[in-house]
Length: 238
Image (cartoon, rainbow, N blue to C red; front, top):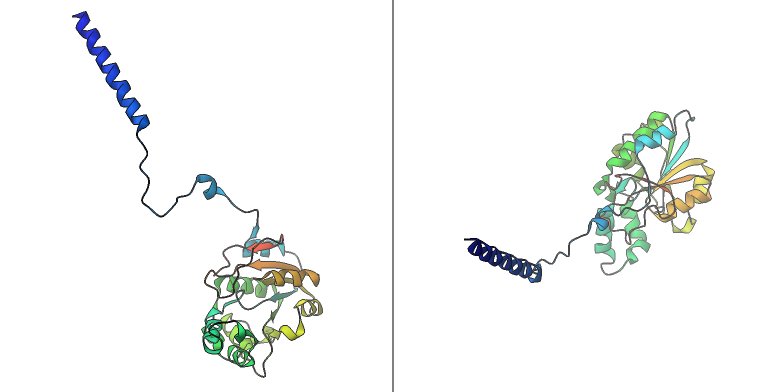
């Protein structure tokens, strides 16, 4: 009886070792998916960016007197890609030559912003600054045209009281950077989506705060937000 039990135990041990050996040796089936997957390290990776919210900006300004604040327009206040996309199709489908065409800018500055979408983050920013009593200025890199309705559209879209509305300043390529305007108007904070906005603000002695450019913007390549050590407004891509 003992011999039988011993023999049975040996048989089970050998069988178990054989199964374990087979399990270890069995090749892992390769995934047929085109998705390579992602590691936890990749998921956890975050860039050291100085993120701020509208509430945090407001808190940092508590106790400070009303100041002059500046805003870029395209991709900062307005998702204006529809007009730029239309202009490219009409004036230079295969190049960026339309950006140097006065006919495009005349149309863009006189009606095509009706198709631009006001960014929710910009609405919050402007409301916060108006509540503080700050003076708001709009400085765009667009060329000036004989007429414009951008000022009226911004006033309407962002519900700015007429008495508090300043005409849009068109810096344009002929006038160089936005620095002279920021400096002349004694602007303390300037919001923009491009590296140039941040650099121009700093040259004028103002703080530049980055606003995220929408992913579907036609303005490419995308900037590296936070690369200049500036504050970046969270959730400002829409």
